[in-house]
Image (tube, rainbow, N blue to C red; front, side):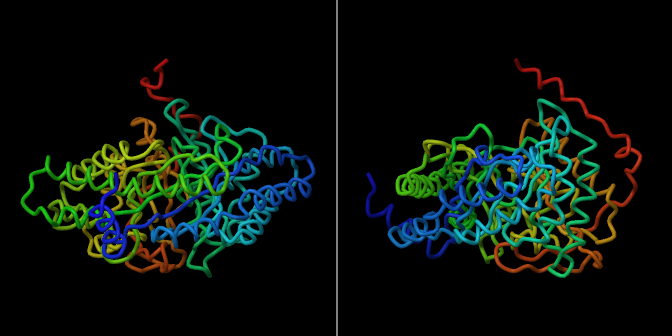
Length: 451
């Protein structure tokens, strides 16, 4: 039973501690839109999305008003377009334009799913879609893209890693007038999940229902505030505090997800427990780690503290919700986290340390700006390194890095809003070209043979 204390506590978390629902994301299957005529297929895509999501924004706004819970984003994800466009011989960019038009008609913030799954090789339409990503992202403002290049079961497609280094660089070059924003809408995954509500990596997996609602919560400020009340707690007590706080945050996500599902007449999918930070003061995963006892995020001990946080968030949240999914843990996007930005600017946080941290958190090297003259092969190798961490650890990892064209270490890209600003970070420039040029498939690890 909900008592007065619980209600007042939730109000305080919303008003003073940056608690919000980061996104309600509607996933829509486009498998029934496949057609060899690309114009007919795009018309079907537009009609299907706008029919399914016509009330998504209104329902989200109604829930905000009724419960007083901020829902920052209303988003859409669709079946990977490489699958939908495989029957067509023309450029898939037309699908991106149809997605953009549908997203604007529905009034959503972003739409994900301009994606390809190539962890074991390229099927019909995959290479064509990947080659079109830079143009698609430069031609649209709402469309997000992702490519899955590896998995624990299949290993890593090194040819795809090599290709994606070039695609990331070109995406930045084509949007240089917009702070290289195209690359900020592109994620390269290993072990991508089918029910991720967060952008830019969301797509609607082929194993999902025709339409579904997934929720992403956010509460780093709430966790930090809870820890601040116990300055002398030992590390076991710290874990318990985070678990209890995560439970409360997730209950809010469950309420919003179930309510939205009922009003939209579509199944409720999952709540993603990931602590999604923002550039707002106090709403930072880095500040949680510093509250635990680090002078600065990036100091020795950061990886251990992040492992504790990630584990406690999952343990607390799993009891609070009927279905947990997505990525679930703690995000460390540099440009979107005020504490990460500060740590990177003062030199406490380097890419190598971030890579180590990704072994124990939700995703990977996320929203990191690198010098504009970084070579395509170095970007490909960064992708391969992150994919290896995901493959060996049976977890999702990703790379979303932005080559800051014309900029060098210490300069800043600034997008504002939730995307924040990113200090350009140093990259190891010793060449991995021969390794990347070998191509082929990095074999799956032995523990992939679990059957």
